[in-house]
Length: 366
Ligand SMILES: *Cc1c(COP(=O)(O)O)cnc(C)c1O
Image (cartoon, rainbow, N blue to C red; front, top):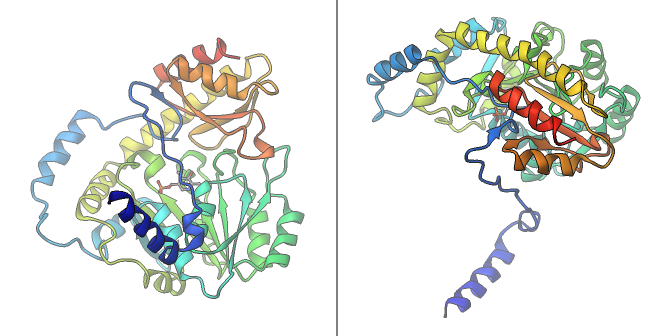
């Protein structure tokens, strides 16, 4: 009986669910309890006790019986202030920047439209493009320093006429920023919407924000995740009101819930606390990089983000990864993700004690 129901459900599924969706395989993240988690590019610091106390105190006044403000008016005003968003530009919020990528994808017209990105990069660009039925074109970065391969980018733009181009700067997982001149050349070379993803801008200090006035096809996307609020899910998109109002038509009215609006606004009132944490991470990034560099056979790539990409001796990445895991340290093994990342691992900069534990585990693993 039960199996008949299963069979019948399968029949309906085959008939009703998109064939490309039926073929998708989503990776599930293994449990990580008790591990030193340096795999997810999170800020390792929690809030100081006085902040948590004040937050809980103020939260008592939040009306959970009411729907959220669909425009997130107060939070947007705060974001504008804290991040110096030009007055002439509009702001749209997403439930994490991954929702923004999803909404942008849904907004693009025409069947068979393409998304282009310099790769290796944030896997969400490709994943969400696939969900939206868009074709993804990945153009490899330069092999030596992961800079944009401009001739290859320009050729691919010409050949594929993409609707959207994503450029993450600093890029994940490589950690480098792209030249603003080169981003400008790409903007000039295409009719595509170019989304510069600045999720790590706090760690690099570089931004295309001042260029928004200059290009009519540029949007800037950012997230509070790497700054220290990954659990909150808040991303923001900045650009001309013309673009933003179109894309905003597809945003569900209550995508930013009341707790997120309240908590993000609260946290931004204490932005200096997060700035201090970011400064600490930037300092510790140097320490971690130097200590990986000391190890025999290891190559460290310069990083402007809160993580470090490094290469271990040829053919040893999987063994090093397994050994670190066994010693309780979790990082990201990218060795099989792209030919450019052969033997590469990515480690998030953690608290000093975590960094020491990582370096010690790595020293006995390479
Ligand atoms: C982490 C990251 C984000 C942030 O995603 P959220 O959904 O906002 O947490 C966006 N882009 C890149 C390149 C990232 O690495």
